[in-house]
Length: 515
Image (tube, rainbow, N blue to C red; front, side, top):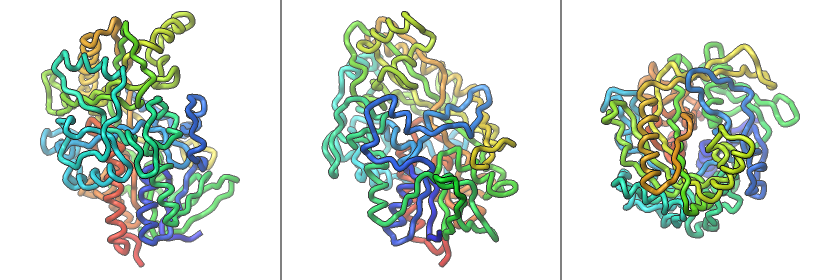
C-alpha cells in the first residue's frame, strides 16, 4: 500500500493529524491496533467499559514508584481519548520555562503565547463548558463557548470546605457539553465518562475528529499492529504491521506520524533500528514522567449523591499551583479537582476508596459510601529526570516486537508534595463537615515523555512541532514529546499542540515529505 501519510494510532493525536492532512488533500492512512469502535459500542456499564482499555502484557514496570499503565491505555478507534474524563486545563505561562525560572526540570522550546490561539480554537471546535472569569488562575484566552456544567450536591458540599479555609474555587472546565452544540446533546450528568459517553456529550475522538477525518477522505485501518518504522538513507519510508488475520503488511509513505500510546512510540523507535531510530541524542525512552495523583475522601452525614456529575470534577482550585518552593521547601504545585463522580467499582470507584476492606466490612462501607461519600483528586507536578526511562528487554510480544520495562522513582520534591496535598485535602474535607476523612495511597497519572521536544538535537528527540531531529519526515504526535507535565491534565495541551503542529506540516509539506 502506498500513501502520502501513514499515522500510527487513532487517538487524539492521530485523528487530529488525519483530519488536517486529509482536508489539505493528502492521502492519509491511519493504523490502529484495536477495534473499529462506533458510538453505539459505548455502553454505560463498568463491565463493558473495560473493553476500551488495551492489554499491557508488552510492558513491565520497575522502580520505587512504578508507573500505572493499564488505566492510561486506549484500545481501538479513539484511543484513550474515548474513556478520558474531559478535564481540559491550560498550562500556565510559567510552566513552559521552569528550568530558566527555577533551575528545575526542563524548558519547553515554545511558550504559552505560541499555544494560546490553539487552545482558543480547540475549545470552540469541540465545545467546552466553563467559566473563564471564575478561573482567576487561568492564563489569558477567549471565554469558553458554553456555560459550566450545573453544580451537583457533591460539589456544593465540598465547596463549603474550600470556602471555610479561604481557598478559591471555580467550575472545572470540561470538554463536555452543558448545552447542545454542533449536533451533539448536552450532558445528562449521570457520571459515565469512563465508559466512553454513549450520548456524545463528551468530546472524544469518535464524535469529533475521526468522523471529520473520514469525511475529508482519511482511511482508518483497525486490527493493525505496527511492528517497525521502515527507513532508508536517513528518511522514513513507511511502516510494517500485522493485520487482524496475522498477515504481515507494509505501508509505504512520504511521511510517518507516530501518534500511539506514549510508551509505545519510544518502544517502536528503539525496535526499528540498531541503537534506536531518531536516537542520536540517546534520549529515546528517557525522561518518562507522570503526575502526582492523590485522592482525598470524606464520609458525610448528609447525602452527597457521589454518582452524579462528571467523573473528572465539578470544581477546580489552583491556589497552590505555583511550583516555586513553598513553605514545605519542595518544588512543585498542584490543583484540586473536587466532586469527582464515583461508580461502585474499578480503579476510580467506591470500592477503591478503601482497598483494605473485605467481606462484611466492605459491604457496609459500600452501602454508606454510595450515598454519603465525598471525593477530590490532587493532580501535581511529577518528577522529571533522565533515569526514569524505558528500555527494551530480550522477550518479544506475539507480533515479534521486544517488550519493554519502564523504571520510575519519585524525587523528594514529589513525595513532599504528596504529603502537603494530603494534609490540606483532609483539612478541606473536615471543614466541609465530613464525619470521617482519609487519603488514598500515592499513585501516578498521565504518562508523558520518552520522546521529549527541545531546540537542541543533543538534548531532545523532536523539535517544537514534533518532527524528529534525525529523520525529517518522521513526526511524533503524543504527550511523549512533553518535556514536563506541570500540574494539569495533559489532554488540552496535547490537542492544541497537535493542531499547531499539523498546520505547520500542511504549510511546509515539501520540507517534511519532499515532492
